[in-house]
Amino acid sequence: MKTTKLYYRIALSFFSLAIIYAVANSFFNYEAVVLKFEELGYPPYLIFVLGSAQLLGLAVLVFNKSGWVREWAYAGFFLNLTFGIIAHLLIKDGNGAAAVFCIVALYITYIQNRKLNEQNKLAINAIQTRPRLETVA
Image (cartoon, rainbow, N blue to C red; front, top):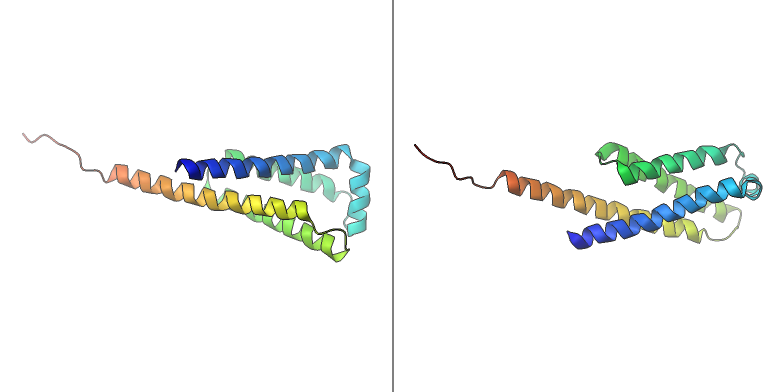
């Protein structure tokens, strides 16, 4: 369980740093990002929507422990990164290596999170089904 948690935290750290860097870059280099979005065929107002959604999704992955909200955050990040790769490939603007790195880190985080949840469920079941000593009077 310790190695699973370690892999999970390392992958989540790399993914979080990549997302935070991407959001910060879109705010600090706004004009360059606007030109890139227009080149990709997207409206500029989408920059703020994507940045806000990415920060919200990252907060869900880091702080939220419930299942279905976390699953939606994983799905949103996967779709965002996949469509980003496709958009860059369609205009022949590189191979989207940064997005591929983020998808790999996201996938590792997802798998390790699932393993941690299963291990926690097994540990809880083991505690609940442990025989108890009771006094007989």
